[in-house]
Amino acid sequence: MAQSVRWIDNNDSDTCGVRPPIRLSFIKFLKRYPIFYLAYGPPIFRSGGIDATKGVIDAWTILQVGLLFLIVIRAIRRLSVAESILIPKQIRSILRNAFLLGALFLVSAVYSPSRLVSAAYSILYLFTWICVAEFIVDIYRKPPNWLQSLFHLRMITLQLFAVILMVLPFKPGFVMGYQAGVGMRLGGGSIGFVPVICPIIAIISAYAFVYSLESKGRSFAYFLIGLVGTLVTQSRGSELALLLSLAILVLGRAKTSKRAAYKAISWFMALILLSGVILVSGGGGRIWNTFNRGQEAGSIESASGRTDIWKYVIQYCVAHPQGMGYVAGFRMLFREYSALGLQVVTARIGNPHNSFLEVLADAGWLALAIYLIMITEVVAVGWSFVKKQRHMARMATSSTTRHAVRCGLLLLVFCFGMGMSNADFCVPLRGTFYLQNIIIAIILGACANMIVASRAQHNSSTKSCLSEMDNNFAATL
Image 1 (cartoon, rainbow, N blue to C red):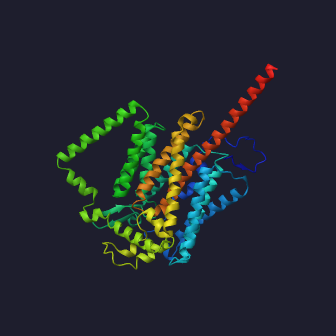
Image 2: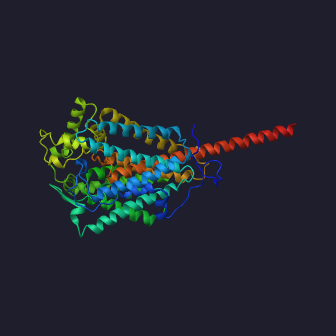
Image 3: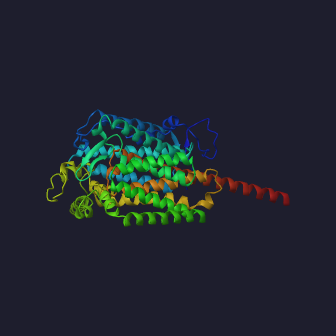
């Protein structure tokens, strides 16, 4: 079974391997857990023109790789001085699948149209998961305040959004783009992907508001920032994924008490009445046209041409079960495919616009199966500890830890929902890739910490019980 991790430390007086969570300022937190630096991306101030998947790099690419390299070197060094690394079996299985998936990506470089690019991205993928593994190992001795981890993640996304807004008046081409039928869209460019960072702000703030984890005014203000930022991106995938996450949050809260259920029902009925008034007043058509960006029915049914791309990926992988080669394969092979008749410039389609099909295109059906198993295990581990409220209630930190896991699962729901229309969650050097992996690290770290704490508490209770039995036995003699 799982045991605690012990770093070599002659002054360590912690006998059970578990210490109370530590609260740190934002700067000290980043210094203590540098994996959160990856959430910045870091921001890149360029309007495009550099295609790393073709082996073309610039100073910003070197900065990205350099930051990841520094953090992974620190992670490897800290892992190398660990006296023992005994991670709970549930977490071990997830890490094993993550590294196995990285190995398949690395093997795909053999048949990739650009072997060097695929191999390089595979190594970056493995580097990221080394950082995740080191974070999970590190929290055994010095666990963070898990809610604080989420609030600091929100602070990073708020900072990125603020930078985007500051850049907008001076260099709009860095953060905005034009799309036919939609117009100008605030995407964030390489500084930060607004359709992801703003929903993360909204979800964390909504969760904190519903469960009163911070000032109601602060939570509401941040939620409005995240919501408005999501809407101005005009990204249907982002809006629908955010709506799904918020719906799950409201339903989950409604199940906790009758009062919460009555509030949820009241809000739902008010929403229905408001929707009815809008439809009766003739505004339904305008709302629908706004939501579908004025597209024709055929374009909506094909998800703006995405279904044609997905069909191409599936057909190719049926004929080539090993896939195309990590990251570089799809972009280079798809450019040679001209029979789709898409209303887009095929040279600009760098991925399948679906995280799951990105994995399929990268390394085939086996990679997709491993990826699905891995994310299912992450959700299962998190959900299992959310449900163990009665057992975990005796732990001093159980409430905040469960809240962090619940909120982390909601963020994952958003990532998976958004991943149906965006593949950046599986591509290194993209901010969304690091954000999703940091969310996974928080969930796994919090669950691993609860496992160790419950084991330590169980062992302590067993020793106390045995000691009491020995004393009673001695008294009878």
